[in-house]
Image 1 (spheres, rainbow, N blue to C red):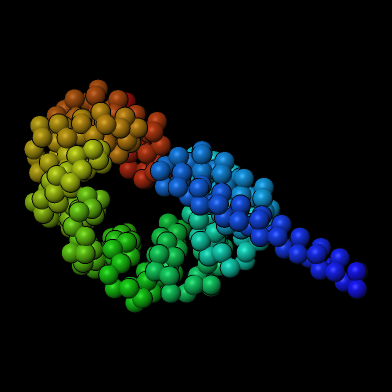
Image 2 (image 1 turned 120 degrees about the vertical axis):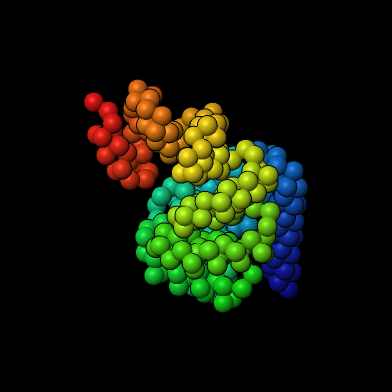
Length: 311
C-alpha cells in the first residue's frame, strides 16, 4: 500500500512540475509577444529564450524567437529556430512559410520552393502561399507554373490584391499587355493607395506607348509616395520619349540623388546626354551603369550604346 502511495505522490510531483514548467513557458511567451509587438525584438528574443529554457520542446518558443531574430537581421539564426520549431511540430505551416521567405531572399529558390510546397500541401487553400510560390516561379521564368498558382489564388479569393499585381507583372513580362493592364486595373480598384501599383501600371503604359497615361500614373504614384526613386526615373524616361529633355533630366537627376546605385537611371540619363550631344557626360553615365552591373540586372543594350557613342 505504501509503495502505491509513493508512486502516486511521485506522479503528482511530476505533474505539478510539468504544469509549473508550461505555465512559466507560456508566461514568457506572452511577455515576449508584448515586447515583439512593441518592436523591442531584442527583449522579445530574450524572453522567448527563457521560455525555451523552461521547455526545450516548445515549438512555439522556437518559432517566435525565429521571428524576433529575423527582425533583428539574424537570418541564419531565424532559419535555425524555424527548423527546430518544424522538427518539433511537423504541422507548423507558418514555420515552413517563413523559412521559405528567407530562402527566397537568399536566392535559394530550391529550398524556398520545397518549403512552400510543404506548406501548401498542409494548407492548399492558402492564398498567400500560392501567390508567393507563383512569384518564385515567375522569378525563375517558369511562367506556366507561376500562372497556375496566381489563377489558383484568385479562384480561392478573387479580391487578392497581390495575386492580381503579380499576375499582371507576369503578363507584362510575357508581353500580354492587354491582360496585364486589366489585372493592374482590377488591383487598383481593390486598393488605390499603393504607389508601386501605379508605378507598375505606368511602366506598362510606356511599353504600350501610352505616354500620357504613363505620366498620369507616375504623378499619382508620387502623390502617394514622393520618396520612390524609381518613379522619378520612370517619369523622366517618359519625358525623354516625349522630347521634354529638361523635365527628363530634372526627374532622373532626382532619382540618382535619391539612390546613386540605380544603374537604370544612369543609362536613361546617358540617353538624354546623347540627345543633347554631350558625349563626355553620356559616356561617364554609361560606364557608371556598367559598373553597377546593368548587364546582369537588365540586358546587354548598354554595351551597344557604349560601342556606338564612346571611343
